[in-house]
Length: 574
Image (cartoon, rainbow, N blue to C red; front, side, top):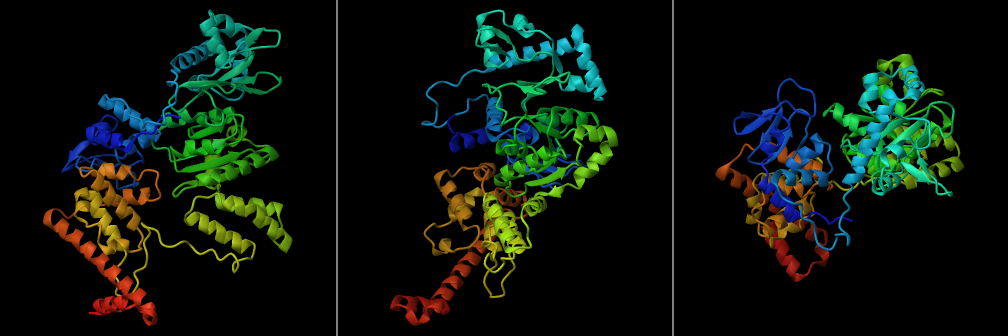
């Protein structure tokens, strides 16, 4: 595996980067007071609510809540992974990405550029055959009968593999090097008699592109009733069917404001929906929907709709997709399920009833939680003890794959209600987490928001963390957020020149990332001496809370106190 990118490199990269320059190169900004503003690129608006702070090296939209550092912006706007965003920023700064020692592969990373280049040439070859080959009329006629226009065929780079055994081979395999590339890409194959021939013959060709638009493989559909109906590229250095989906590049290219992706079954479903103006559909590539597919799509949107055909195979595919997706359902991610009527698929349905009808079905898709329990109820009766036991035995292991959080707890509670085991399965929510608002207890104790306030102040002015004495007892107080505060203090003590954006990046992908970004985005109204006064005040409140907590502990064991503890209790009540 490639080496990890060390934290010190990310810190250095952010120190070299001006977020205003990065965002302004993609979304024109206007100076507004101390900050810069624009209409948000992540949602539709007429009045600018998107703000970029050069001081904090942070962006925030007051309309939709999107926020983050320069790395986060590239991830959201350009739909890049974290590593890809770091590489893009490093390229802008003219530096090489540093990776930690001990994780590098023994062999240098292979240059796949020649294989990508060959795939592009092959794609162009197939497109040319669709336009010019004498046998292509059957293919173009088939596409016209499916209601597809030349414009949409061009958008998806559709092609045609003519009849014959060596059309591609004779055009592209002029020498051993090129022939070797064709073999490695699965575009030609050799049989037991040592005869080499084209994999795709007399088929409509669907180039498969990754999210960057690079052609990684091909799918082919027979024009007549031959078998197999669909044939895809085999696994290659470029193409892994469990990690790619068809149409994602076109989805991301169509808009930077995609909020939802529809996951359908076939190439033609994607293309037909696109032609009707529904440009946010993708398809799995002849395989079950995997966890890798789900994670790939959730990097671009927060909501997925699994839309499957109404036949038995479609229903089974939907259930497999849902069970594979459960471990990916972190906070803010949502999945809905739409099962079409028997005999319908997205392609036929949208041609028959139009885009408005299909969009209405999508809007009323069933939430994953409802679908999950409804599906199991079709398998196990909830009216008998035996049925409820079987229901629980199938549901519980699946629910346990959910990430810890409110959704997982509520799913457990619903399972307990349906199986009538509330008492035995009392599914109380876990103890309060940092970032969740808690009711203020009327005990005279300082409210828990003191911790939230303190962390917010440090995020805005990281140097404040250096003023905290790490030996003080109040830091042992068990309250939500204490672990986060300690991590901030530790980070600043190890490197005292960290910027707010650098601190924020340390929480990427972590449990409290969303909360930290929200705190970071809060407008700073207090500066100078008043800021330090607020800082010391928050610490004072936490010290009082720690004092009260210790008092309660000693009072609870008052009959068994040591002499030292009795003296401590006397001091506390003074």
